[in-house]
Image (cartoon, rainbow over all chains, first blue to last red; front, top):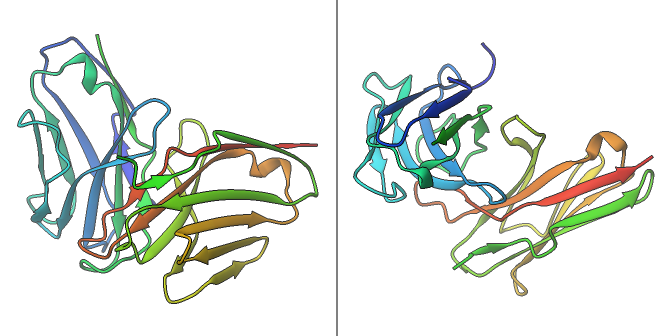
Length: 115
Length: 112
C-alpha cells in the first residue's frame, strides 16, 4: 500500500484485558513513531524506532505499555491490563530518514475503548 | 505544561476569504514546525512545514509564517474552500529524535 496502515481500526476491551495494535509503515521508511490522542487533544508522543532499535520510549505512560519493531518494519504496540484511561486513538507515523527532522506520515489510527 | 498552544478552539470563515490559524510555542529549542490537517476518523495529513532558518514558506493556497522572536507561527489559507473544513494541528520538533509536539488543534469551518 501507499500509506501507513494500522489494525484494527477499532478495538473494544474490557478493563484488565491485554491488547495489541499493529502498524505497517510506508515501505522503506526508517523511522516509526507511536502517538496517543485523547479526545479533544493533540497527539502525544509515546515512542520512536529507528529501524528495529527503540531509541526513545520516554512518552510511554506506564510499564503496561510496550512497543516492538523486531525486523525494522511492522511495529506492535501492546498494552497490558488495560485501564479506562487508556481509551484514546493510537496513531502510528513513519518517516524516511534516520533521526533527522522529516515529515511524518500518519496512519488512520486505532480507536481503543476500554470499558 | 503545553509547549505548543493553539488558543482558539475554532474558526469560521466565508468561502473565498482568508483563514488565519495561529500557533504559539514556548520551547526555544524547537527549530522545525509543521501543520497537519485532520478529517474525522482519519489520521493527520501533512500540509506544510517551515524550518527556523526561514520566516515564510508557501505552497499553493497555503502559507506559513514564522516569527521566532515572538515564538509564533500562523497558517494562512487563501482562498478558503469548503473542503478545507477540518481540524488543523500545529506541531514542532527540536530535532532530537524528531518527535513532534502537537497543539490541541483548531476546528476550521468554511461556509459556502
